[in-house]
Image 1 (tube, helix red, strand yellow):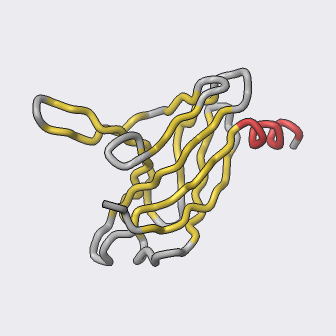
Image 2: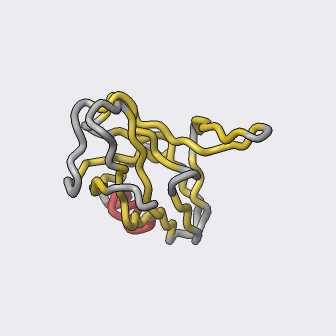
Amino acid sequence: FLLSTSVFARLEIKNPWIKAVPPMMKMSAGYMIINNTSKKDIVIVGATSSIADYVEIHTHVKEGTVMKMRQLNTLKVKAMKSVTLRPKGLHLMFIQLKRKLVLGESIPVSLKLKNGEIVKLKAIVKALKK
């Protein structure tokens, strides 16, 4: 229990949100700022949410003139650094949504760390600003 508390204290999640999508869409993306306030790197190895069958960590890669999404097996948050998940960059991909996302609702998301710890958060459904 003590380890769990200290891990949560070292990994701060700021402004988590999920992009609102039309009801027929079966995928969406999640964004946030992840701050590692510890003196050791923290590695995220996966994510889950009750709203989707799968949640994957993705990035965008330019291949020639085309931007493509690629799944990442891990996401390292270096000691005393931050990683920003944002549109057209690193993000969580919510695949096979189980129901419609409602603007303003709070969606539970769990991040699984390499050391086995789980970081739970709530992400708000928001419209993507243009």
